[in-house]
Image (cartoon, rainbow, N blue to C red; front, side):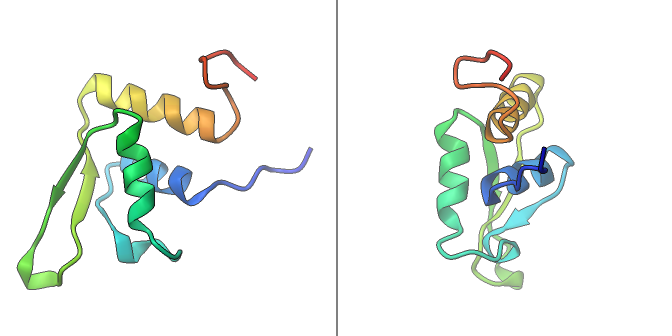
Length: 90
């Protein structure tokens, strides 16, 4: 079976779960802010701030509380096709 290509949203989630800070210009896609919105729509809390000395893009990282990190992992698994929307393994 061919390896499934990950979406931009999944790649962003992987970076967040690795503890990385991400800004919209890190993602090479059009309308990158939509991906952060999709993540937040899943109830995943992001910490967002602006550093005026480094441009106008918001910096974002995952709130690493246990509950929030678990939500992010579950959503990443769903995006990767490992579980379906109800939480059952595919």
